[in-house]
Image (tube, rainbow, N blue to C red; front, side, top):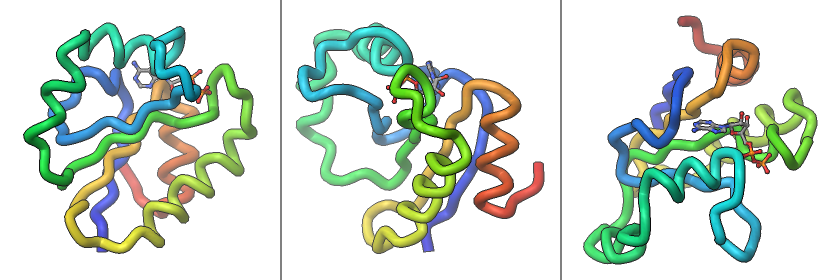
Length: 115
Ligand code: ADP
């Protein structure tokens, strides 16, 4: 089973193998978490990914809960369910990195974890 951790903070400051990005298909790095990831990673991003052979630790922001405007309750439920249904092979740990207390609380409810 994949271990799930919930934290509050800036996803670009985490030491993980991969960050899941909330981006559109242009991958240009606009605002929100996508812009923050692009600013932190810089143009070296793609080159740095080449030697990565799968990822053990993956961080997710609260995808779709910002500019996209998806309802938080449903979005957090879908995110947790999707991770739980994902076959645990290479991925060992998923971190839900929340911007703010309210989002952290929702994720904790969905995962059923206490601080
Ligand atoms: P989307 O289009 O998927 O809604 P956004 O970037 O607008 O994308 O927001 C997604 C979520 O990421 C929001 O909850 C927002 O508060 C959060 N967020 C923005 N910047 C960061 C960051 N640096 N670290 C973690 N979460 C962030």
